[in-house]
Amino acid sequence: MLQTTKQLTVRFCEVDAMHIVWHGHYVKYLEDGREEFARHYGLGYYLLERAGYGIPIVEMELSYKKSARYGDTLEVETRYVPSATPRICFDYRIRHADTRQLICTARTTQVFTNAQHQLQLLPPPCFTEWQQHWLPSLASLV
Image (tube, rainbow, N blue to C red; front, side, top):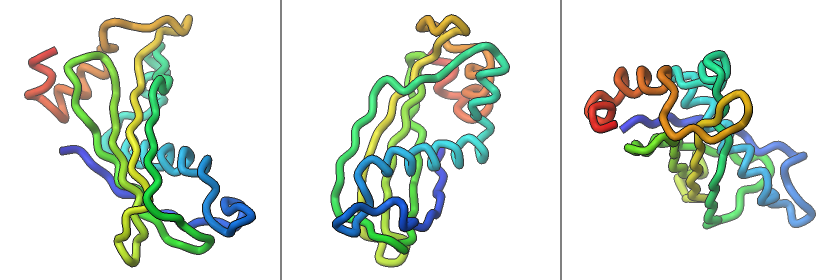
């Protein structure tokens, strides 16, 4: 299982009038988690962009469990979900770092597009190489 954890502190500008994190900021927290994953496992946007591909998010699901507040330290756990289809899926768990209480769960799905933003039905060679390095058993199924 490929997984990373990113710690972040809730900033004042991220809370709403009720003094809790505004729901839209969780999307940014997921992005922070994906960027941490990319740094750790070498699956960054630049790798795909240099190869001529984009990876837009086509599906996002969030489930809010508990509110986070200004000053809270959160942990964003990002787990890669292997797929035999040409897509990148991540599951997330956002927890309060001190209490370990679950704040939010989420899942994102990204697809591959070419430079003209057309959906690609085959994974880019650089992604296949990445899979072969980190998930050799999955790469043999594709």
